Image (spheres, rainbow, N blue to C red):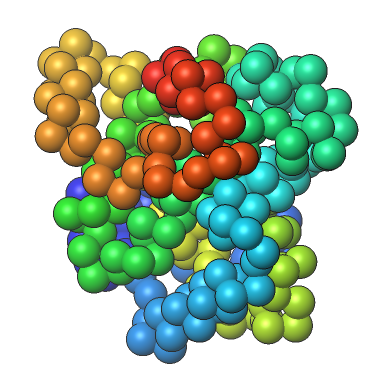
Length: 235
């Protein structure tokens, strides 16, 4: 289980960075004080400079980039197979919903660096277990998730996404994918572990809302609430 220092074991670091030109041989994801400051400052900048719903806009851009980097990942999301253009993806309520949920998971880590065990980690583990319901999903796809997040952050932050900032965010991205992987692998393990995971799911109850779409936003965000609710349950 993760502690507040954002460190993980080597076993959970098994996902290398896909576009890594500065791959220092770190064996820990512990953030320094300076790296925490960089994360806080750049997250604030991302939030301030993103129009509309920050989680949704970043999430949509990230998932568009995921599909660009690895089109095979579409097979895990058959509901999106008919969305062949960026505009179609951006207009689709369910696609926006999924992107929003994804970035909420990122936000849960950034907002709770001192309480990861209580808030972020249980939800990331739960998110990983939920991914077993995505037929066609593969654990190695998480490498693409990291690469896509990095590309979107770099595009948004420009020169502010320098070497030190990139290294700090890679630690956060690595934590997210490693815990999702941990939860994903739990679901496929022995019955005793699966039963324990199910009990943990009931206690977790999606604290940060990363598994739900029916938030308080009106109008376009809730244009087809029944469809969103059904998709949230199915996914």
